[in-house]
Amino acid sequence: MLSNIGFPGLILILIIALVIFGPSKLPEIGKAMGRGLREFKDSVRDVTDVDNKPETLSTETAQKSKDREI
Image (cartoon, rainbow, N blue to C red):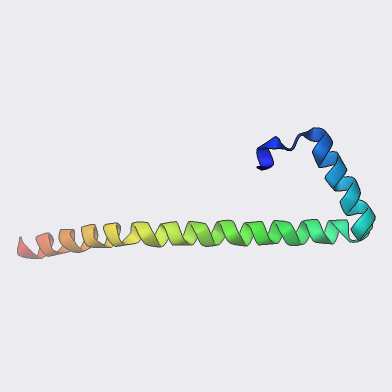
């Protein structure tokens, strides 16, 4: 859906946002969107790290049990 928006469409959206919110609010909105995206990316990264950890933990546990047997 968003792949159909070209450069003229982005300019039109920017002009409409400028008219609706005004020039003083646009930087604040941009910062808030950037923070939200950063938090989303961090949470996704944390979830994928947690998904990978059980494999690592089970491998470490298996290695420790082998070390104890020797």
